[in-house]
Length: 459
Image (cartoon, rainbow, N blue to C red):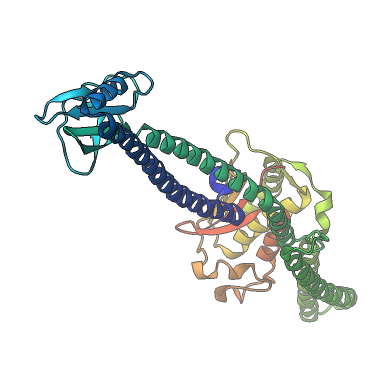
């Protein structure tokens, strides 16, 4: 199964959608948390600046400006903390202490970029951070105190990494859990689909496997099984009725034919009466042939012959059909073109006798409904899905609107109603093809008709 096929599954799409919703929710929550925590850390940095400022102002008030100069000088030269900046101006606006000498007093809080402070730009912190800074008046000048916002950057980086890993873990866990939980439901859906496909192929006894989980799909399965049971009963009744009618009428028709044959032999002296009896016998033969065809179609639709399937090559079946019908085609004034397989054509599972009957019916269909001189072209080739046999002619063809109707039992085109036949030839072709899992397609041959039988490869 390809990734595209996987994401066509309703359960997988639901799992992905649910995971996306959870991921977006977690992302929004983390974003709010990051903003809130960053604000908290920033407030903490400002609070430490205020604490340091208050301590230095206490020194200025108690010991005087000269002592403040000494303390600021010591703090600025300290290697304990490279994330703090200081600047002390005297009354003349001259920087007398500190590690910053390019900044001039400003009002309120300001964020100073490290890159614009040459004295600390190369401290090697590895971060293009900034400093929260504030100027404060002292006894004989102004005092600048600042602290790096590197902690804010680090906290954001840690939280963003946590968010990334959290989203990845949520996505993996969500999709994985969703797919795992959906596998059970998908198996149930596959069971239903396989059962319906088997029933469509003629295995009317197939049912969706029952499970005791009482899942909602189990209830659907129970209803499908009930429907299939009713369908099987109806089909069996219909097939049995057709079979019973065919059997019941076949026996008296056979006896009637025998009686007509006896009467025909007794009427040898009167050619007129003999012709009447011979015509009656021909009609009885046509009726018996119709019953035989109905019985065969009923058996095929019930799938009874599938147990006899073996690996078989279509080329050998077609060779037999052409060998049997080539003289008939030539005597009838038709021409035959046999395009044997080019390359390797895979084998199929099938019944040689039934397939021979299928191709024979297609050939007889042309002989019966096309004028003398019609060309019949039979081709065998391998497609991507399996072997394909086409039987084409250049006769009058069939209107496209009638393509599906001609497979109905006893259906005949308006122009053919006066000709002999019972309208079951293509019905039998469709029944044999369905038994083999093949498709029957009618297309125009411009002029004429082309019938393509597509078989699945052997599995």
